[in-house]
Length: 178
Length: 379
Image 1 (cartoon, each protein chain N blue to C red):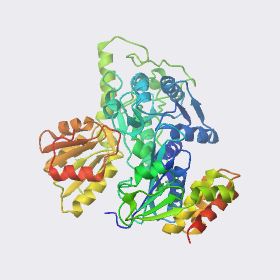
Image 2: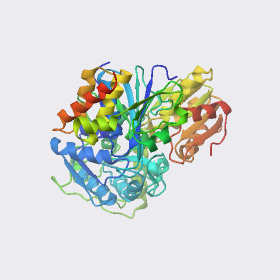
Image 3: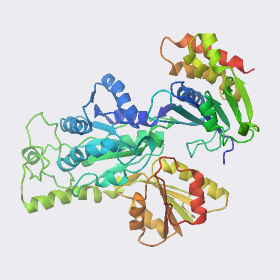
Image 4: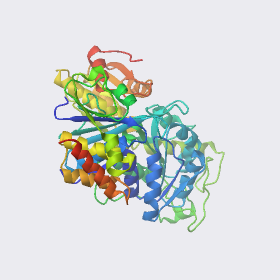
């Protein structure tokens, strides 16, 4: 039933911006005339709790709006990785921050350890751009939309005045995957 | 595909409300409805409207009733705990026939429950939350696009029948983002105003052929009395049994006798279905997926979705119950609508129930299993 559906699950700690990252990917998908369903789950706390965002992208209308069989997982914290790694099917793509260690259950997945948190700090001087670095890497890796579309989608969702720093983060993320 | 925009369900509610003519919002933010208040506070001042964050849910409901009585289309949004607090004033709006829209983005209860988790536990509260025999219209969207269109419809029905209309949402749809195509300019319904001299003298006079009295903005022209007590044509309290019977009967009849104008449903693959899944709101998305998977496995399943959840679409369901073997009601509660389903079906086919009360989302797989195993009780 999942033919042609990309089922993306983005996880991390509250405040890292994984929800915004999934919204940007959904926005780009709409621009590219694809169907999308974006949602998230989190606890009552605003910062620090574990956070899971989901985005389904498809060429056909989407019935169930939640991810059931992830084709992609992003984990920015070890806790999130340990929580969401089980259930990742064979052949799925998993991007983890380089500081994390992949659990045994991911041995049949395609795991890429990328310096997402470090790149954000080094290339933009702001750790909080890590989510945009991730967006750049994910879009390049999964070939979801064009570079122009993802750029436009990022600009629609970042605060005025932060455009150049976020564009730098996006490009730095794209360069992590080549 | 034409131009679509990415919107969250809660945001689409505000866009729909503005298109319908809402120019006043009073509320007390609560998860998972907060984005509605947030968006209303940003958008209303730009549309010549007013947003007030009140001190609590009770006063929010009161402010909405006051603004609507003064002639401004008004809305509030809340979740279960706030919906409970609003009930007394919702009853006041029912009896005084003041149009308004109340959005309840349901979360897990009872009490403050699980604030960020989905539920449909307010289904019966939407019908019977306020005391006394009273009319209720409640609509439940199952997509972001429907958050827009059903909010418009909620305002239209509210104005036309001069009654509170509840938009019964859930966390699944309130917090869902999808690409939606917003309709162009719409022509919203307006509350009736009659120039008949009899209506001007008697503010609650019902002209021939009408269901509700005309409604002039309170504070403009002649003053009239507005009360939650049983009232006569003048609008003043009365203890007359005849006046009470006539008023309450009309309040109930204006909804019951206009069932066909108010009730809408979605049917999906029901033509040849053996098993009919009945569910509403966000849960219907899992059910639709389950129907597709069942069909792929050679099982003839179909989906019946009340879009209008109150009044319950019993006519349509009764008609279908003669053609299917079994009806499976699926809801994020312990079987609130399932009772309505049994009442409507009157034993014409087998009935079963699948529900959840733990705050997690019902999955297509769980529904599919219930369809296949013919379960009688999901508790």
